[in-house]
Length: 156
Length: 156
DNA sequence: TATTGTTATACTCTATAACTATA
DNA sequence: TATAGTTATAGAGTATAACAATA
Picture (cartoon, rainbow over the protein chains, first blue to last red):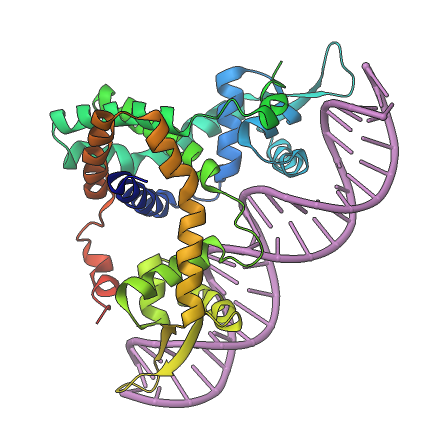
C-alpha cells in the first residue's frame, strides 16, 4: 500500500466529514429533509419512478424508502400513480408543490457552498477542484460487482 | 453568481453524497460506530479531552456527546478521569482497547477508499486530487464568525 | 416462487428541556 | 449567574422481520 495513497485517503475522509457537518444547514420548517430532498431530486431528474427504483438509487432498503415516500405524499410533494403494465408497482410523481420544494431545498442547502467557493478559491483553483470532482466521480463509481449487478440492473 | 461555481457546487455535493453511501461499510459487531470512531480518533490525536471539548470538535450538543461517551465507557474504550483544576470537568482518555479499536475501525472504514484510489487513479491524477483536498480544506474551514468564536476558543 | 410494497419494531445519531454539581 | 455534565424524551434515518397483493 502506497503511503501517499493512504494519507490522501485519510485527509479526504476528514475533509468530507467536515463538509458534511457544514452541509447540515437549517432549512426551516417547510423544507424537505435531506432524505426527502434526495428523492425529490431523483424524481425531478428522471421523472416518475417506483419505490423500488428509488430505494436502489439511494442504496437503502425498500422498507426504508416506503417511509420517506409516505412522508412526501403526506406533504403533497409527490402523488402515487398506477403503473401501466405492472399493478404491483406504484409510480411516484412530483406535484407542482414538489417541484417548488426541491428547488427551494437545493437553493438553501447549496448557498453556503457556492458562497464559500466564490470567496475562497481563485479561478484557477476552481478549475483544479472541478478536475478533481471528475476524478472523485470515477473513484466512487460502483464496481461491476457480480453480487450487486442484479440490483443495479433493476432500474427499467 | 458564477455559473461555473454553481455547477461545481452541485457536482461536488452529488459526489460527496455518493461517497458517503460508499463509506457506510459494514464494520461488524466489535467495531466502533461512526460517531464513536470520530471521538476515539480525536482522543488519539489530541490526548485526554473533556466532553465539552469533544462536543465542540464534533459540532454537536454536549448532551449528545454525553451519550456517545457513555457508550464508549461501557465498551471499555475510554475512561473518565478527574480534571486537575476544575472538578466539574471529566477528562476522557483512551484505554489500550480503545487504541486498538480506533486503529481497527480506521483500517476497516478506509480499506475501500485506498483500494479505489490505487486502482482507479494514475499517479498524476492522485496529485491533482491531493491538491484539491487542500483547497477543500480551505473551503470548509470555519468562518471567523463572531457568534461562534466563543465556542471555537474553548479548547484549552 | 419471486417481486413490489407495506406495517411493525428497533437501533444510531442528534436535538431540546430540565436537572445537579461546581465555578 | 455561568459552565460542565447528565438524564429524559423526541424526531430523522435506516435496518430486519413479517405480511399482502401481484407477477
